[in-house]
Image 1: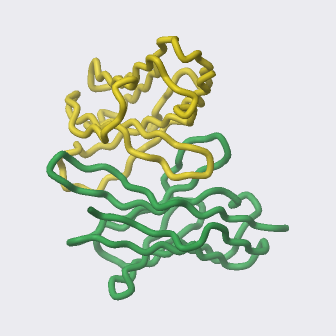
Image 2: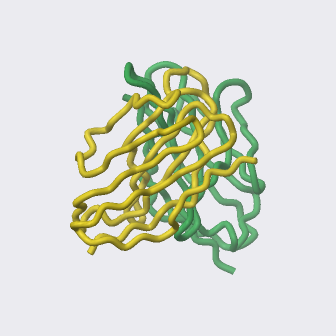
Length: 115
Length: 117
């Protein structure tokens, strides 16, 4: 089965500084990778995905992610953090098996941006 | 319209009650999903429907019963729940069917906050 790991429970960054939220993957074949954000008591919002092509993927709200095959990583980045970016971030992988496919999520990383 | 609508937003039910959660999407998506999420934890897959047929059941207890009446609607019927079933229940949909090898993203509803007393 495919899986993703988020090694950090929490990331703290000052407003205006660059941020990185880490994700590593374990898949057989080519990975389909996603980032989602969740604000308190809300559903998940899609940020960006990597399917194929350029290793640098640009997404919503100024976020981008870099796919690195040799390091099996898909880190989320933003050049300048905003206080409003504070939220719970999930990396996900599309898992394929005989029964079908669905998104499988990492444990999540809480991003806290201080003013 | 990239919206998945879930009702109700909040639900409190007793352990002997029967209730239903409803999910609706009008994007023509071929797959619909139910996830369960505990506080500060990742969503856990419960069920997947493709073309209105159940394709994945992640060993969910029978007190949770999904139903897909048509391509736009997904229900989750609840009966004899336990307090540990209290959670945020998320519905999602994606353009690709669950049998496809495509890479489309899933769109999530805002969830139903369920409390079992």
